[in-house]
Amino acid sequence: MPQHKSCKKRLRQAEKANAMNRAARSEIRASLKVIRTATTKDAALAEMPKLFSMLDKAACSKRAGFNANRAANYKAKVAKVINGFA
Image (cartoon, rainbow, N blue to C red; front, top):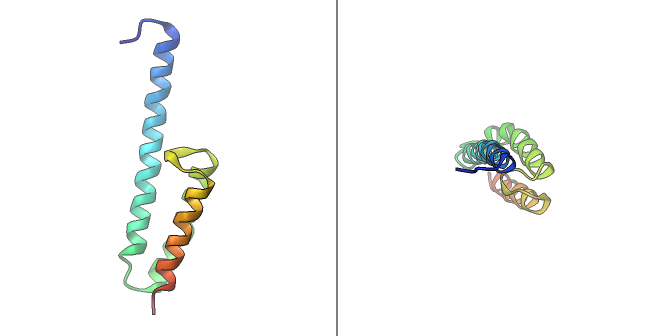
């Protein structure tokens, strides 16, 4: 357990950041699963804007380990899945 006041604060900040990162990553993964398991193209297209918004927000604030390139890679993979529907 930290003794210094500043170390206690950093611990609180780290716990808060971990919770926010975990929540963002969980939301993104859940949305990806919805798209990948969709049976129709319309169902996948309905979820796509939500996922793209989450990816952009995560990349903008550097949440959950996302940066602009990683978000772009996820978007490209999702587009590939959606374009794969007949």
